[in-house]
Image 1 (cartoon, rainbow, N blue to C red):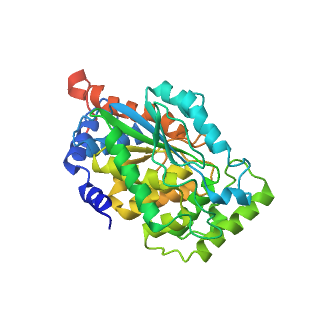
Image 2: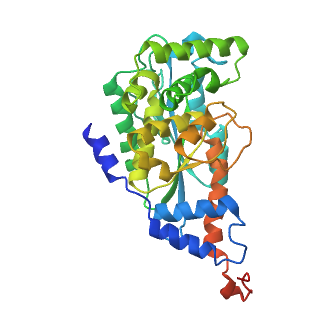
Image 3: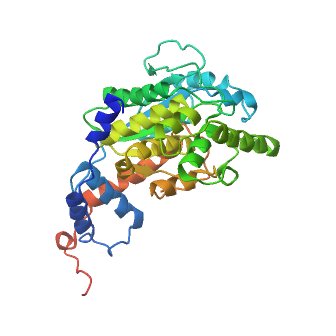
Length: 353
């Protein structure tokens, strides 16, 4: 295994059971029936385990939108042409996309990462260029990239997170942009989970029935013709993935190694987490599922990771938007644990035993 990747995986530890136990005990002392705040309680306890304290504080938020183009886009799997990728990157850099609005709303720092856009981009304060190639090859005709490129992209994601994480960074949101990337993400999902392609392929940007049928056929070709080694996550990423998906996988690994919780968005960011989790199963303990996308494969991915979504708002935009919307809920869960009075503090009679 490549040195940086192996080193990073070796730094990922189990979350603190002692802190989780202490947080659970505190939850049960707060002025409410035990368990009455449902998933808010579960979120706070998981965060306690990640941060290693019974009183977790989420801190600053970091959003990274990973961008890359996909060769399969030329085969008609999207409602939009490939040039929309670079156009949307420009929109991100101008602050005009949905993720920009929501990042401002939650007070998050946002960066845009060129992992494999099929055009050269002008320098910008918010742009980080980590380009592995000018888009992947068409996965329906061959491997998306070489194995060395996949490793390079994963390690680029690790390095980038390590460079950009701050001392007070407490939540990480990996977003994405890339026309054709739902095909790559669905292919990864099918390879990792073993579920039939027909069951988990969605409409992406809103394709019609004919394009959906074609998309299913092409994803099947990608898995069948590329001799994917199903037990090898790097092989899966190289043959079926995207540069931005590999970058997300690396950033998720980097976050877990530094004990920073990851708030996953939809189909694409979760496919990156699937690759990271296949490389190191401890990763899932550091991930939160923000929402359930309308993309058919998303809930299958979350089930594979053992994650339950916090929201279901019928979203399918990507970019990190669903994750940004879930952040206030995660922050609220922490504040309940930190600020709510216990029965003894409030002078309230506890439940009869």
